[in-house]
Image 1 (tube, rainbow, N blue to C red):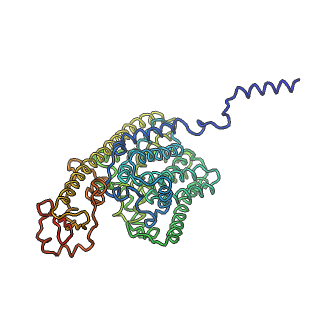
Image 2 (image 1 turned 180 degrees about the horizontal axis):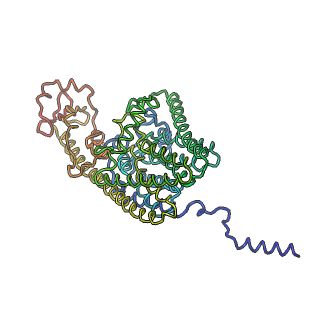
Image 3 (image 1 turned 90 degrees about the horizontal axis):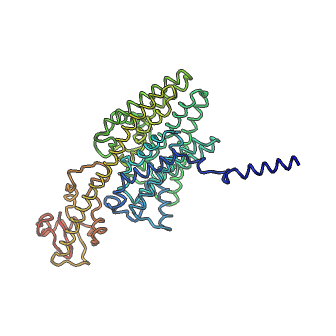
Length: 524
C-alpha cells in the first residue's frame, strides 16, 4: 500500500506540472531578444519605409531589376547559386516592399544573436542595439540596390551566425568548423562583411574577459585563438570554394575593384592598411560616400569614443586588481578594435571602398553599451547615469540616421521624377522627328556631355551611394520607365565624322535630333 500511495502522489505532482515542460520558447528567447527584434523592425520602418513603399530604380538597380548583379566573376559564388535557385522557383525581382521587409527580419534575427553574445541585460541597451543595427547609413546605401539587398542582409546574418556558433559551441572544434562554414557562405555572397564578423568576434572575446577575468591566461588565450582560427578557416574555405566554382564554370575573376587580386597581399600592404585603419578611426573620413559619421553625428562620434576609452581604462584597472593577464588582453583588444572596424583597408583597393561596405563601423556606437553593461555593482551610480548619458547620445544618432535616410530617399524621388520627365521629353522629341521610324537604329553622340550634367537637387546633396549619380544607366532607365528602346549603332566614330552631324547643335536645341542616312542621330 505504501508504494501505491507514493505512485498516486507522484502522478498528482506530474499532473500539476506544465504540459510543455521539456521545451519552452521562453527558455531560449528572452525579453531582451524580443526588445532588440522589434526595435530593429520599428526603427527600420521609420528609417527606410519611404524606400520600401516606393520604387526608386536607377544606377545598377535599373540594369539588374530582374537579376542579382555580378556574381561568379566577382568572387560572389554563393550569391550566384542563391540567385539561380531563386530564379528557378520564385524569380529575381527588385521588389522594394518584399525585399525590404525580408531584410529587416534578417537584420533583426542577427541582432538577437548579438544580444546573446554581448549578454545584454538592460532593455534600453537592446532597444538601442536594434535601432543602430537597422538605421546605420550603410543600409541606406544597400537599399539603393534593392535587387540584391535581401541577399546582402542574409550575408550579414550568416556572418553573425558564424560568430555565434564559434562563441556558443561547447565543443570548440565543432564551433570552429560550423562558424567557418557560415563565414565562407557569407563571403560568397558579399566579401565586405568580413570586418563585421571580425569586430563582433573581438567584442565577444573582450566581453568574456571582463566577465571572467580570473580565468587562467591559457584558457582565455585559447578561447580567443579558437575565434581567430574560425575566421581564418572561413576565409580559406571561401577561397577554395571560389577556385572550385570558377574552374567548374570555366570563368576567371574580374579586375573590377581589384577582385582578381583577392587573397594576394604582402607585409608592406598590410602595414599600410593598418596605419590607414587607425588614421580613419582617430580622424574618420569627412565627406564623400564613405563618411558614416556625417554632419552633427561627427562630434557625437568623438564623445562616444572618449566614453569607450574611459570605460575600457576602468575595466583594465579592475582586471589588474584581479588578474593582470586579463588586463593585457583588454589592452591588446583596444589596439585591435580600430583595425577590425576598418579591416577593409587591409583587404583591397582603397579607392573602391564605399558606403555599402561600412557596416562594421556601427560597432563603434555599440562598444560603450557593452562596456557600461559590464560595470560592477560597486559602480552602480556610474552605471546608471553613464547609461542615461550614453542612451541620450545614441538616441540622437539613431534619430539623425533615420532622418538622413529619409533625406536620401526624398532626393532619390526628386532625381527620379526629374529623370523620368527628361526621358519622356527625349523620347517624345525623337518620335516626333521627321523621317522617324521604329525600325531605324539610333546613335547617341557626345554622351560625355550628358554625364557631366548636374541634374540633381542642390538643396539635398546627400553623399551616400547611390543617391547622387542621376544619369547612370540612363538608357536602360529610358526603357524601364518610358518603354523606349532602339538598336544602337556600334560605330559612333563614323557617324560623328559626317558633316551633317558635325553641324548639328547639342540637345535640347532645335535640330539636335535628325535622321541621317537611315540612322536616328541624337547629339548631346
